[in-house]
Image (cartoon, rainbow, N blue to C red; front, side, top):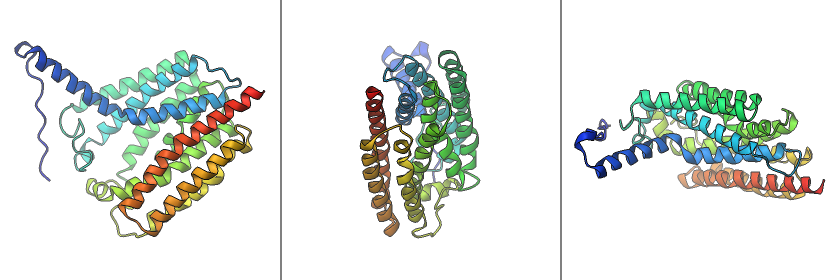
Length: 315
């Protein structure tokens, strides 16, 4: 693989035109937006908001939700930045990530690291001041688990997926804590749904990019090895387990029959896509699992939130 040449940096401010300077500024902002991974942050905020509403005792949403989303979003941006700082060399070895701001040389490693750490600290402090200490501590712990534990483990063991699923499942719990609700079986149910949902999702991604991961030295299943049907069967196992777990909110009184019906339908679709993937591991079947997972989660959480609000209004 040929070396990646750093993109041209902005010229001396005193010797450049306003248009050129504006272009440089916009390019730099664009790079930082890419570092922040806004699409992931939006999904995090969706799960946080759902957790907050589910933890409320009334159907009235308070300004605390805004503070919680803002603080957690800032920490999520910091997590993405530190993650990319740690993986800048491995990203440079993979086709799908080699043009990111760090491996391409458009941003310096030290500035991205400082940006990530400052964002994580500011977000955590903001949560402690505007929401509550429990949410701030749990959010900081999520940052450490994701950037400090999961990311380095990707070069050590394929079990990193299970470790990474822990911080990935915590956002609804953060929203739950932000609402003032205590950690209990209801919070665990929300955590369990997201924890199990992630496995077929990440197995599909790992299978699609297995050659890239192998080239970069990342130990993600299937790791570039010849293990036909193993990844698909693992996806089926977790998709099957997800169906009863997704029904826990109804059994615990967080939602009613509408949610149960939607959860069964979505779970069956997720399981069916995983079964097709296990029977015939192709890029098409893997992408089907991936897209089904991306449709499953927001629909499930929105239905759960809506059904919960209906129950609150009847009280």
